[in-house]
Image (tube, one colour):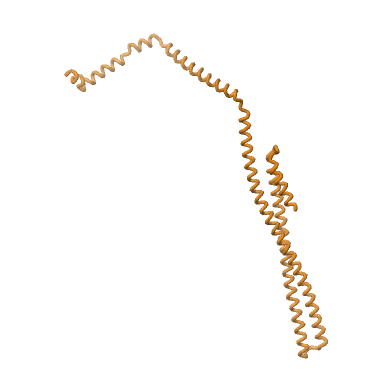
Length: 238
């Protein structure tokens, strides 16, 4: 069956994970699922048509059964009329015989339509089985597709990370770290140099101003006055 050939093709595509482009098995799986859906639609249409034929055959069978019984009843009625004398015996036998022939013809139609109905019912059962198989296969392969897509994402991320790790040169990394340490040491030395320059650039006036600053003397006077106000000095003298 073509369905199983396609399933094998999909499974073979998934198993061939060593190919360079990982998108290929995904595309093959998606195409396989589309093919399965097309088969599902075709089987659904066929199922509807065969079911319609089965229903029609059953209705025809029931109609022929009714006609068969009707011809049987007519033959009985005719013979009763002959027996009662209300109908000529020769004519009655002829009509009753014709009714029985029609009854036999209807019986043949009943047998034929019954065989057709049974055949159509068998076809319906087979189509329903195929439909369930296709639905199950679609569900399974949709799950496989989701898993495959996730595996592709993980493999791409792992490949990218491994590639970056493989491209790292340990010697160049150590060299870079040494240069960074040298750069920091240079910046620290430069900062210290600027500090020394700033200290050496003070003028003699700045030094004299600092030495002759009266702020400390004033602070001492203010402290002494405050102590006198609080009586600290008196307590000390006593």
